[in-house]
Length: 312
Image (tube, rainbow, N blue to C red; front, side, top):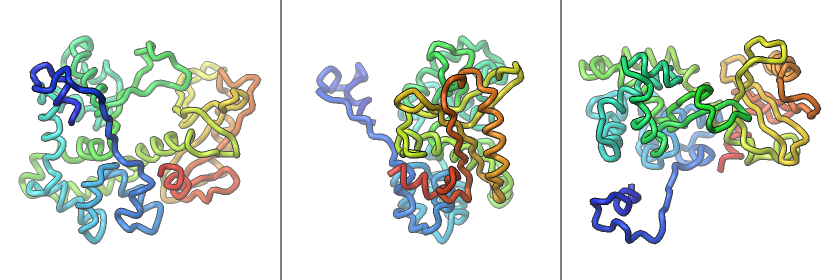
């Protein structure tokens, strides 16, 4: 927020800044201590709601469990965080209605610019300015397949980066009328029904974020991304995680799942099969890992505890 005080032309300190400080959210590895959650799975669940904002953690810590905190802080029209995203957008953006519509659509699963524009009934070119501003502020991020050129806009997917905003635009904004009619329990039931799917997206992000920060398989890795496109057999292919070793000799490929009853053996075999069909894998060693909610950190099967330790 301080950035706007010195970079906006109308600000009294414009042109006098000597340094720009970018203060980001805390990584998820610290949330266990803040919320006193002994189980690593519970810490991931909590991060999927509150993100990395210490004030959110402080508020949530006052409640007995995650659902009680969600009901009181987020689903109640009187809750402290009920209008938090709206206040945030008002501070940084002028066309609040259009931006809120874009974020709501992304939160509901529209990730391609053409799809967002189509749902809004506008040409995609008209969204370049608001989307650019959302990207600049870090409210939205642009995902591309591993190895894709940054200029390849056709292969871009847009996602809400912050977990709390992703939660809010998925479950709160579309249900504002029901929440203001005091139907919070009905919305909570909807959250329960889609909870695993919501956490799965956050879990994938955290796993990929951990790759360059942890020596998986005793090797150093670069940034991890997902990959999608045609395989060597020309059939559509998707891989949850791909990263290159810092020496360029190996590729780490991974399967990432957040389910109640994971099957790491099946997932490992599936990823290995996909890796053999990966167009750019020829001549390089393939290292296969799987990340699930029940991972132990042994035999290439990693879990929440590994991620929390890496992201501190």
